[in-house]
Amino acid sequence: MMIPQASPTIKVSCFNKCGDLVYLLPVLRALHRIRGEKIHLLVSGSAWQFALVLEEQPYIETVELEDTCPHTTGPIERGAIFHQWRWYEPGEGLNLSLQPNYFKDDAPISWTHCYMRAAGVEALTESDCVALPSLVNHRRWLDGIDVAINGKEQEKPKTIILAPETDTLDELFPMTWQQIIDQVVDADFTPIVVGMRRLAILERCTDLRGQTSVPVLARLIAESRGFIGAHSFPWHLARHSETPAVCLQTWREGLRRCLPVDTPYTWIDAKDYMSAVPAVLKLTEPVTVEV
Image (cartoon, rainbow, N blue to C red; front, side, top):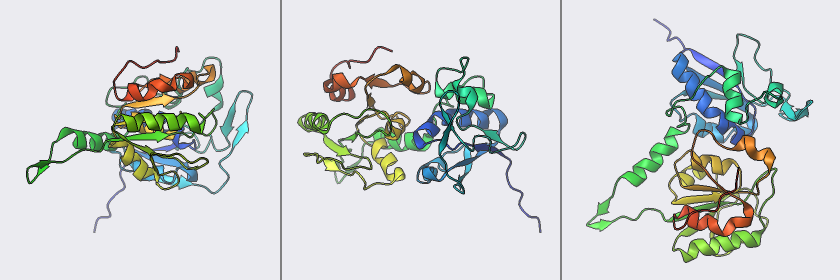
């Protein structure tokens, strides 16, 4: 009896946070295109829920969690990196966690370009930049067909997802988000608030903070009519699912590296928050920060 041989894979380690992992995905898809092998991705245990979404993607073979030691960052001359950034020895796999050379003077401006240099990928194709095709397919299927049951046309969700939280950046005050919620309701849409922390009571909305897993959150975003959120993981999910998405975040120069190079985006400075809902609903031109 012949024993099936395992398919060849490209081993990649990346212990970054979920949002940072999204910047890497177009590079992984490019590696799959160039080398014809799927990705075996090693990630931190903190990404355990995102792993379920990653394994849906056609260019990823498996996702393995590595959490035998603390995945904390240590300071370097500039910035900070994960202690496991050299997980694989040369020839064993690619180490694409934050690396010291990402912070040197000649480092590329965007995180995605940093990953490209480390992985030896010279250019991305349009297909490479469809980094979460399972979410895109979900949205296109829902948007692409009209269904009638017994002659009654079925309505599509009229939800706007709001994600106020961010780990390390300035957050808008709850009263500001309440004004945004009120705008959504007045436009005859249903606001759904997502996140992990319920630090303030928000009214006139469906509050799912602390109530969803990452796969459920991804689907909620993919089938919503729009998304407004801080610079955080949910915004990355929104822009990679083709959901009309606004990043509502106070601009500072250090965020230039976080501007996407793989999808279109709209970034609105926090001071212009009243333009976020019209921008998502395409009622007016958004007031965007100069970058």
